[in-house]
Image (cartoon, rainbow over all chains, first blue to last red; front, side, top):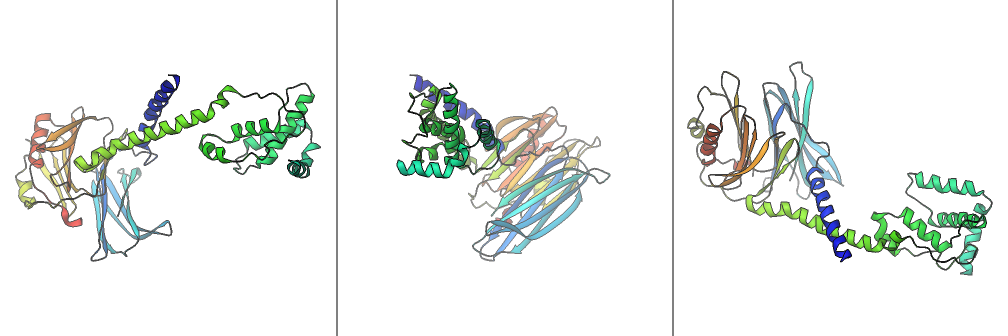
Length: 133
Length: 289
């Protein structure tokens, strides 16, 4: 009986501990969106043409300067290497969209860094969103 | 056994000449060291030696076996427990000196293997349950939304169905309901992957609609919002409310497009009216998929 109670107790305890851990482990430090409203990114690979389409988008909550920095990366020998970078600036929103030739047999990802600045041009917020192909 | 004893005497004789306090300092330094490489045999020998000397000073003695057990309990924590079970005790049946003392097993240590098994099994069950929370959602709505304390992130699955005939986006925009006093001040239509519309009134209240291809990641502010699971025109979504500020997300029928509607200061019925309109449209952003 004691064993059963111990088992149930530990199981419940671990579930309660595991849930928030799983929910928050992806990014470590979470972004705090005071100025940024939304950020999106995506990568898709067209195997027939051998091209990767990469997109990044940021929109702010007000008319402030924003920047989007989109990197296409390839994984070689376990290390991510940047193949192509595109940057766009804008007021309130900015987006980047580009295509780049890719080879079969590799992993690719797009890493999008989004930045928000105040009127003086000082960086006030940033975040990063990643998508894998 | 003789060979072991000889080997131990030859290798560890240097420790016999060290003061007991120095040996203890050695053990303490090892415990505090970040170095992951530990010479198990040396530690066991030193611990047994210290025990022997303490016994000679009137403190209960330990055998090498007990020293080894103590070593295992001190140096091999939960992560190493399974491996530790498989490690042979190099000092089994070997005593440094004194006759074997009666076994003294700390009650907790006695039950340690059982606790370990229960912990490992429980952890497995907990992880399986935790994983299933996400796994259940994916085939139903084709995306997983994670709500963090101050933002939300949507991860889209790879499932995809062909969209129906798309509507002309410009006509859809023209036909969209616009609340009194608001006007369309910005329109971004990026071929194949994002449409963004911004409406404002003279008070600078804002209505933002983002239509994004349901692929990759979509991250947005949700800090301080109350969440409510909703269904709109048959689409499952989430409504976020923070005082007068509202936002809603949902996926289209084909799981190809995500809609994000935000209003900084709008009554709920007007907000729903806008959401109802957009959730009934057939908009395709399939160019990137």
